[in-house]
Image 1 (cartoon, each protein chain N blue to C red):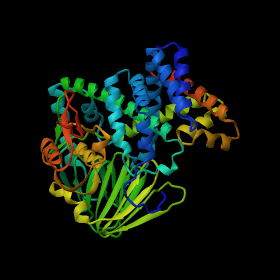
Image 2: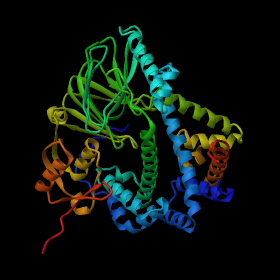
Image 3: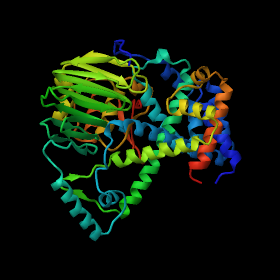
Length: 181
Length: 329
């Protein structure tokens, strides 16, 4: 955490400028990403809402790329909640509502979910063991420790394109071994 | 299954886009690739779903470090929660669950774990084994382990007001994402919403820190302090507030002082089911000072439309959009 005390005020951020100047391109990207102009408009609204905050904008080198990245993340969220809504509707059609004692059972990430998460992580580690040590290391640094490609290149002493090649190899391998279909 | 060539391309795009050198050109080229063939999009969906699940598994496995222990419910009850069941089986499982609640030790010998949750628009108060009272606001989920020598709460989402019973021998820890709030006995409020954690202290003193950060620095907050932390970046904003204003939600009111409309819309979306969005820059630039009673969504929006130059459009798909009103000539 860094604790520089910031005045909470009216910051018309360069993220909003980036959004306004590239709105058409963002709409086109979202329509292509989601396969629907209507969903694209929903996500575009959502995106705009999230831009208008006093943000740490001085640290963002490329506001346009940042806004595209936000759009891509929101598109993923949108897809996930569509899927959840469909699953929920299907489940309600057949499930019974159970009350335990005087409380409704909470639909939360429970100890079981955490356990499942740990199992998935172990399965990934197992599949990674089948890769070369450097490839595995690059993948772990990026996906488990959140380091950027440049940081990994510096730390491991390889080029950026080698980092990207390793990430390609690792992901292709993992999806083949652990993905669906 | 997609032909391997397409998945290789999808993976390559995922990797290229997660580089910090990805710029506008990269995103536009990606758009063209998506547009060139429908199966490119579905191949990319597959890659994103896989990496998304991996990332949340990693986060969940990390967050649960302090919550290791046996599963909360025996297997028969657990499967009741996840699959449809016939009435007879449900009755049996319910009886088993009732037994579970009766026979769990209630005195603080073994810590008892539980999860509490409120739906959108609901509030709830829970008394914990040590005498602490937690007030849950709308759309809140917490996991609690209190008893023995532990006092642990995890706030997954939403807003909680804590009245922590004084017990100087046992610190009371609230974990929110990767951060921890540690208190001995005090009154404070925690809100986790849209990637920001906001802690407000009404009484006493609170420590706020990130346990696994490299340099372990923390903040000590006293009554009247409020810190808002953006989780993605770790940037914290500190201000002084009137605690009774920040805590007004417990009486059903929210108080705003020169707040941007986006903040009010974000609160409305926490309290009510129909999603509200802002439709244009003019509306987005509006600021509001005043008190809003969060009783019913249409009533709140009507009040806002009277006080600000905005109007609410109720869309066929269930969403609501706030816009600058069209001029009538």
